[in-house]
Image (tube, rainbow, N blue to C red; front, side, top):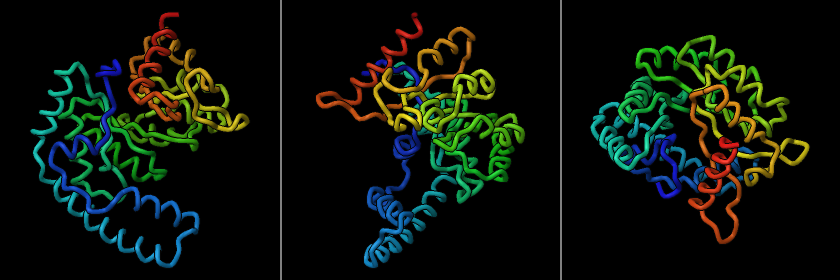
Length: 273
């Protein structure tokens, strides 16, 4: 509220913690640090052993969370929705870690129910790059009347979502325009124009093209056509929300709230021009 935002995509952890999800015994920073080093082949023998132990702990914890998700009441999610609404903020999307290929059907159903309890029209997740899984999610989404909007990074292309869209009318896009530009796609506004009926929300950031280094920069300093995109949404009455995603380095002396305010002011100026 302090930054002037009145609608959000809510990440899973804050909502689930509020609803009583068991706390993880695994330090996420350490775990994902080891995961990154493992991918790069940089783990020492001692780190490899520690990583193996953390993976066992994480697997046990994930089983505990799956059990919790299969039984938890939606009352706390409805209470959280009311808290946000009373503060003048609506929740249009929910992103828990419940929709992966390793999650149970009970977890997936829980994710849709929680999204509905929060007042969201769709859930978001990283595109799994698995046609069977997007088909399954689309079919399950239809039963709940909640859309599944798939997010992408620099693997996005104009045809990235096509198979999922063909599989179910409840499969959709969580487009990231900045990443789309950083991937080197030409004419980025075309993806909005061509897929607007399937876009449920769009992440907005300013990134550079590959030729300019793919940097994530202060709005207005990169190659992402933010002004044109926002004005296209306005002029064509596109109803999906554009999510401010603050990913550039926060300047010294500033903070996240101040920078989000700057992004919001940028967007308002674009829409008033």
